[in-house]
Length: 324
Image (cartoon, rainbow, N blue to C red; front, side, top):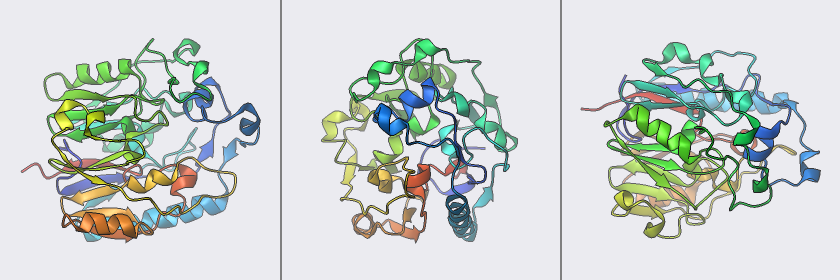
């Protein structure tokens, strides 16, 4: 199993499932990490429990279309077990960092997601885990309503794997509500001398990196201009990369009463190789920008990407890419 970047030719991938997706009972971790931008009155309107069956069924239909597309591209596709999970198995990207032959299980800040990787651990090799049981002092309630204060303190490592983008010897790690500095230090410790972790700070607190930046090939990235204002916002290692500035996205909306991502989830594309990406089917302005760099776009549906919180990068976990 080899995968050290976001763009080499894809050989094997996990694609998520929407079965049993739910909103857990709101505890301190969920309140500050996922809903720091909500008022107490808005929180009262959030219903814990299973997502509407229409959302689950239509999301699964779109995931199947995506899986079939990948298979047609000679990619081996595997799926998580349809377990009765505490949160969901829709976004395998969130819980494990794949680097070379390592499967690094992230110490996820949401308590409900601690064992989420177990629904697909049979497909992982050389699993590295950290024993943790996040205590209340990890979570900073001062973040509520203030995007300049992050949800987690640095008392212990906590991060989602979706805070990470890989560029072979260099790793970009977003410090946000879903990833603290202690988490980056733990990741660096596991990687050792294999790769250098670079911090992206003070650009976006809510919450993963893949609605802000996508790596397209060596030296070329896609960036969300509402968060990355200039190359100066990037760590020095990445300031010499070319940037495609994402155009204003088409807002595809969300299921009434359920919204877990902004319209900028449009940036959340997934590379099959350096010249082909999967892109949400309404984002034709972005398609045109990518085509200027000779990147073809498979325009595919993901109707509940804002509802469930993820498009094609989120719902995948690439296990093997061509490293030749």
